[in-house]
Image 1 (cartoon, rainbow, N blue to C red):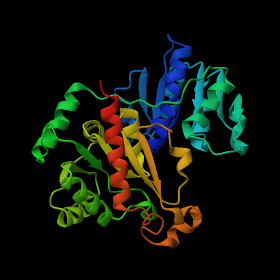
Image 2 (cartoon, rainbow, N blue to C red; image 1 turned 90 degrees about the horizontal axis):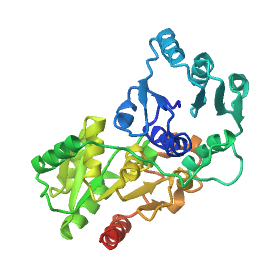
Image 3 (tube, one colour; image 1 turned 90 degrees about the vertical axis):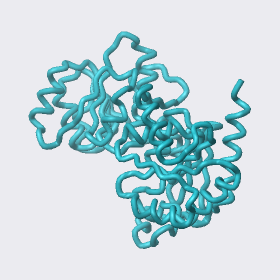
Length: 329
């Protein structure tokens, strides 16, 4: 299976492993992905081997892929680069999206659906239907170790988070500024949570230092945990009761780890990225629904997301905490 980039896409593509393993319990399933996303799958119980793609050594990569003598290759990314890797694999069955010229490399071509927008993982399950693999309910899964869980608790304790406290994790950054909920809103939410006895935990990813410092200056009760490594980020998310973020990879990590999440959307279509679970609440700025992707760069920072208030996010967090308590025996 091939998905080289974008953390959320890798997580959603890995959701196909559930159906493949159910249909072919004795099969070996490898996953080819990039260096940035390789840690996501490092402990995945359904992956036989994670192959890290090195674009600096294309010949070496082709040799390694051919050495496995694959029967099937499912190229979910379907870019010119991955199409050539698929062709070079020598696999009998080569499935990919119908992408025009490069589609000649695939034995099974999947046209993009032009109908109603559906959850991305459900859309990708069409690959399996094309190959006559029975599909189940779309679901994602990631695994962390006991050692990683203990390390996360140590980091939280070092940041001043009590071990028995309710924790709401917050991820401040997203790829495009137009999709970033303002740090002032995060600070307001953190203050409201602290008033209710819930600990706001800021997950400081690489590049978030200025945002985290600004939030801490506005809300001293917020606890900051550095999550420089991807496996550390996963473990800290797993230690939270709820995750609040924009439309970004950690939101999909939370779902795959079974952590309830509130995801704040701007101009992107939330339907495609919403698993539709009771542990997921989607909030969107109504004014952003008509924004086009090509207009984002000119829209200005936060232009597509300011209409979501801290109070509405707080209400959603309360709802998820109540649902979690009700589900516990």
